[in-house]
Image (tube, rainbow, N blue to C red; front, side, top):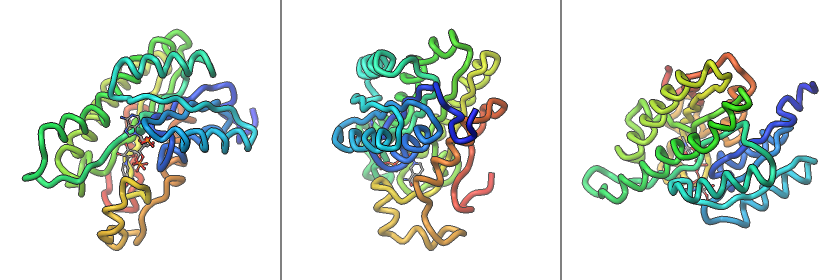
Length: 247
Ligand code: NAP
């Protein structure tokens, strides 16, 4: 198999693939040969632009809408991917939100919404694709965590809780699925230059990082590709954080 085409014949679903880190992951997976479904919640045009970029490079992709925190949307979305590209071999649970809230201003609604989009979504999407992966005895699931799963974080306790929960979910599924050749890992970035991190960028977060700059979406996508290619790596959280936390 061509070294650059190691995922040829595989189908990937990237949640929140319309922009930021998800976009870079979708493009990288397609570059490695996978057919890629690019999920979005509201920005259909941006998801279609990612698919157009994949197709211009000779790859296969499709844009699929849906709120990944809603079970019915997830079922519809996965059904569309299976019908259009084939059964999902690689699931990247990347969609997320990071509203900045201090303790005194955090509402129950903020908390519930953040947990639903950042954590429950990964449960819903995993449950939807795992039966097919089990039947084929091959699968890769990567959950997009954050330094906030272990550190103090800059966005708020709701975000910390959602990402720490995601790493617990990762280990639980990894333990139960390893024997069926399905790996489940997390990638935990530090501040990456995307829309979500704009408030951190404006506050000068780059200067607080040992490397002296924010990360790029492509650097996170590189780590995801490494995880997807490695069948002996499971149950881990891979830190990509410019030296902010040593794990
Ligand atoms: P971003 O630029 O804000 O992009 C978020 C993506 O998630 C968009 O594609 C958005 O879709 C999608 N999305 C949001 N809510 C959704 C929902 N309910 N259903 C489906 N899609 C939804 O964020 P990012 O910085 O690339 O972050 C991606 C992931 O990395 C998140 O899980 C985030 O927590 C994590 N992370 C980010 C950083 C960072 O510094 N940027 C650091 C650590 C971890 P639309 O375009 O349609 O709105």
